[in-house]
Image 1 (cartoon, one colour):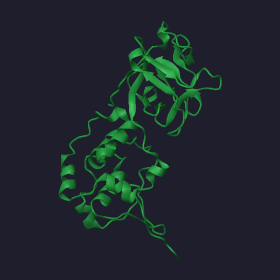
Image 2 (cartoon, one colour):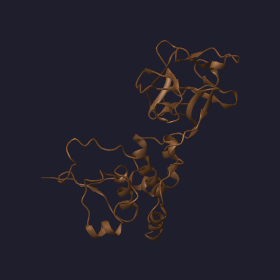
Image 3 (spheres, one colour):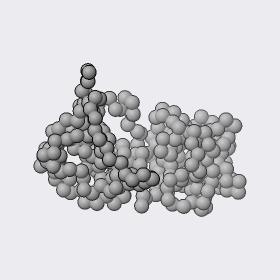
Image 4 (tube, one colour):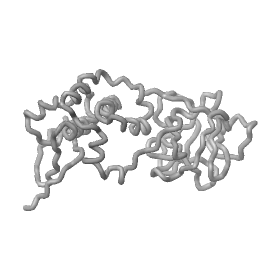
Length: 273
């Protein structure tokens, strides 16, 4: 049977075989990672940047021990990804924080020993990894534009914020009580003029008035300007302003009016807990 062996930039954290001595030489997994999540990236970067190779062998078989039946799993903690990014991504960490700005001040524990390991083992830079190993990643997943501002979009001097209500791919956003927990109330506006929540963008619905949230690529729905000094979001294609009804909980665009308090907004940063 023909089995083509190719190199792999990254892998699943529990589905690999490695020489035992080399695994210990690499320091095993980062002991500061919690539960699960991010360990696959951490070990992959460590292997490549510190002198090893990670190969994908399609005809190989690797055993995997699953947890007890009925165990639903814990969500991968953002703590883990911040540790990995801070240790291995160098200047590329800015692109991670562009998509996850709320994690910038997240406590990630002591990473001094890991940085010392990188220095002592003369591990290569993340720029080298991106250019020599993962060179085609940005062709499929372009680096995100930097943020202009981010956080909750709160009606100025009110306790109501724009909330996606968990809607995706065409659902209306609404006004809801601000809860300062991020999630469905965490948005960012970037240099590409997108208002985003994770991989969704705000745009105008079929009625040309209501504001909806829908999946977007990097060059889609680039249609918003945030005039922070005026507390205003303008919809570039129409020249209208982001407006709201706190009574009906609706979000829409309307002709700009400096006297309408419902068109005044502020973005307040939210810190991950």
